[in-house]
Image 1: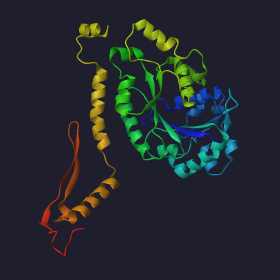
Image 2 (image 1 turned 60 degrees about the horizontal axis):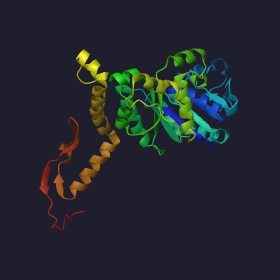
Image 3 (image 1 turned 60 degrees about the vertical axis):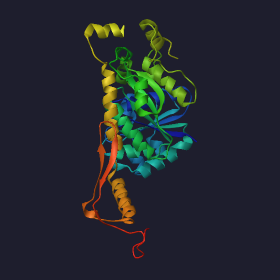
Image 4 (image 1 turned 90 degrees about the vertical axis):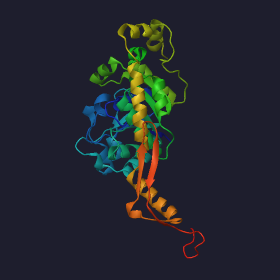
Length: 265
Length: 94
């Protein structure tokens, strides 16, 4: 029986979709069977980030409305046989699906996959409620900015009302040089405020833009630093202990950068 | 190196400390917000408990959360018409 994990943030534009795509690809590359659900109905994007936009026939709303079978709507990834995408509808809105329908959908998918990853829309309204309805646990994506951390705090509060374990945090787009200058909150600042467990740290990385341009998740590019961070997160999801990229201590600049980007396992 | 830079540019505290402090403040307020239905339930319970001891004017009672710089207080102003006497067998205390 697989596990349903929702990837959410409150604030838009912090990297939920990128994180979903990369964790999906990374878990698949580790041999796990994964289905990605794009729960952002009306604003679908996980398909383009995955490079699967030309293969869509049916979508999530078709499935819950009974217009097609679940298996017909699942798009197989180009790279991995064990990775699928259930795309969002583009012409409907969030009210086209109910939390009960999402719960049922997750229940139907769980037996066939190791992981069901749900890419939540931004916001705290119906779309968010749908996305978290069927989830066993949640990952919160936040960038080191006041607005993002504030929204993450709100989401953590809302998730407390659901009966699921405490969410875990992915800090995205950290810029080590700015952290060193004291112009960006570091990981410990953010953990101080949000008081949840850290699952991963993803550096701000141009390779994400390039990989999104191509529709190839960065987690599959051996040289991408962000991709490496996502691969680490995937391994942590599988229970492996993988050290974090450290930004806290104070060695020389060069060795610090080397450790951050060079041999981050 | 950081100290040097700070001295060079004459900066006070790093902007990330400002960010953290502002976040702290704003979250004190955010976290103190109560959903309307929870708030109504709280008021109803307050009235029920207090009415056991005091005859109060529910219509003009005022209950609110007051957020100070870094603390939150529940402040209630509840006009009392008269004190119910515990010994009064007709009224009794709940």
